[in-house]
Image 1 (cartoon, rainbow over the protein chains, first blue to last red):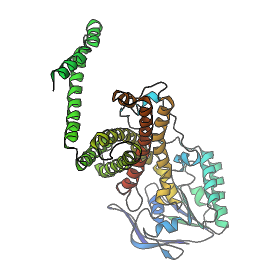
Image 2: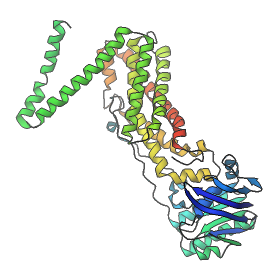
Image 3: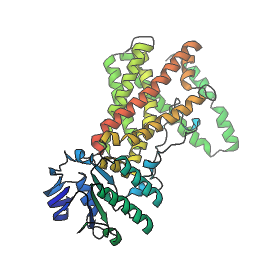
Image 4: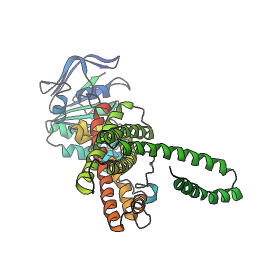
Length: 195
Length: 253
């Protein structure tokens, strides 16, 4: 169970959420909706312990979330981030090509140019679903699932499959918290929180 | 400086008449450039040799170590400049990493592998200079790969952290990429060493009067030392840079 109690979240000088209260229960899908910029991702990041709670509190199974306890809580959470399509290196490890010998005068004291790593090619919709399935499968024993706009890059058909996947997690007794801007995703939820 | 040395220097410089003559005949525009670059090189080389001469003259261990510290600080600035990194807060991490990696491996070589007294300036300076040169070049590749991979793949780090992986464990994919950036060119060069290229170090050892067998052993030790120092320096730098790169929430700064 996750609980936000009078929680105020601040990013820099910008107060994003004021006195937010809700409970996400075990065995239910709780959906947080709101327009772009309303603070859905910030709320998730606060829950993960990546951002502080200014006032009020957030608790996980009755235990207070702080920056010191957040890592322990993350160990019982599965997290599907908003930019999941950029996690290509979770599916495929990058293999840099072996450079030509003369390119680097290793024992001749030539200074090489700096390396610039580029953002990986985004995953396609099928791969996003595959990664989500794989992540949930690997963390089958974790009781909390947090998904930040998991259907943002999926077709309507794949959106259904993703939501079925998440609903199955809730049926298994897990707490499932999903953020979305899509009304069709909210239809799957047991509880909808509007920001 | 005796007259013989001056004469030999002049005779050596006379060899430049060949490329200068060829340029005069085919590409005169390049002659001023050649003269300028050559003049600059002479000044640089002379400055370097004067520093080494000073070190040799004083021949005190503390001064040799102090020289290595200054070299490490200077090279760390060069590493960050080459990496296009504006955060000078990373400089202590790079300088300490570079110094520690080079000093530990260098002392291993000087004490256990190479002949002569460990802190004898005649051995200390060339060995440490060679290790520092190689390690600096490899740190440029390793650190730039690590920093740009962290930026480009920020989502992967956050994904791993969000799924309960410890900070250092979540950094492993990035450390792997940095390590490969250091190791891959080394492997590529080892493949062709003494086959397609004659290493300058080996030439220097032979010129210094060592027998080919002894030069081979020293070259081998130095190659191993270079690889070890660069990997050790990279590891220490990455660990020390952590506080400058991430805030208390694990967010990149």
